[in-house]
Length: 75
Image 1 (cartoon, rainbow, N blue to C red):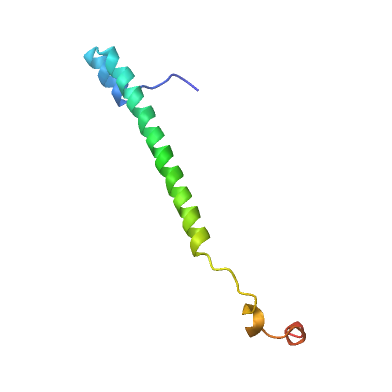
Image 2: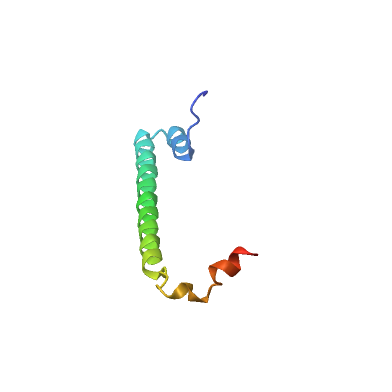
């Protein structure tokens, strides 16, 4: 896949000669990705719960407004 191209944090750390900055940039990236994962998971869970709570279930007598079966079959 070729050589690894450093990100901005790595390039700045190399230019300034601060190896600790590379570790800090990596840590910040991984932490940010973890936060995004948690937020996405919570949003998916909340959405699933809202759908389950608000989704209407058909009532047993709800099919009464449909055409009778023989009339519907001749169309």
